[in-house]
Amino acid sequence: MGRAFEYRRAAKEKRWDKMSKIFPKLSRSITLAAKDGGPDPEANSKLRTAINNAKAENMPKDNIDKAIARATSNEGANFAESSYEGKGPHGVLFWVECATDNPTRTVANVKTIFKKNEGEIVQSGSLEFLFSRKTAIEFPAEGLDLEEVELALIDAGLEEFEEIDGTVFVYGDFKDFGNLSSACDALEIEGVKAAHKRIPTSPIEITEAQMDEVEVILDKLEDDEDVQAVYTNIA
Image (cartoon, rainbow, N blue to C red; front, side, top):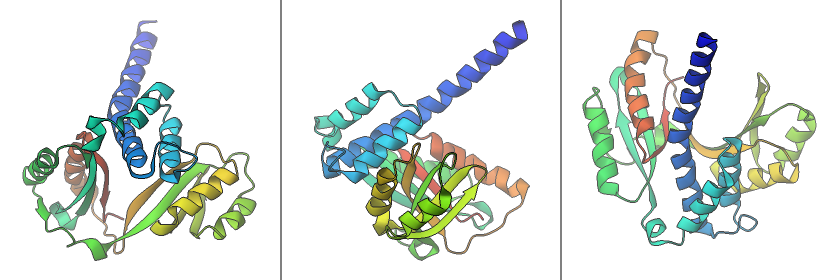
């Protein structure tokens, strides 16, 4: 019984640790979407997608409602998106996307993480041509006619469609984010997660030992409350 109790406690702590990191990021995504396009998810596809992403992570409705309300508050007025480009060890490149109400704090934190781990921030736009911006959507394959879904998404801008271990991955041009998200809504697909992602145009291979060093930077960046997403050129 003692071991079972310890296992359950460890599992619960791990679950709470994940929630404590991801919920603030999801909340900021919702706030920014509501700020940019209004608080009505029916009229704001970006907000609708942000809410769906939050629901897929079991974020409570009360948290979602507070995030939407924050968009019209004094706190929400200061929120803005920003991105930083960096180089790490072993030729690894980083694209760091943030949502912050204090850009001075955010850039200082990001610079410190790189500087302390054999990396550096580079001039904005330096890595633009090394990453392509794509719409990336994923959802469970269970219960779906995948051929029918793929055909329906082609008209919405589908570029790539694949199923791996029960999860469907959909990719399209970043401009087709709204079209692809709306098409998934129309198909009534459950558990949809959607986002803009940076895909490396020339991915590189690194060793496991090198990856251990790179993961130090990745972990520290992802733990920062202002950082929404981190992309690299690792294959």
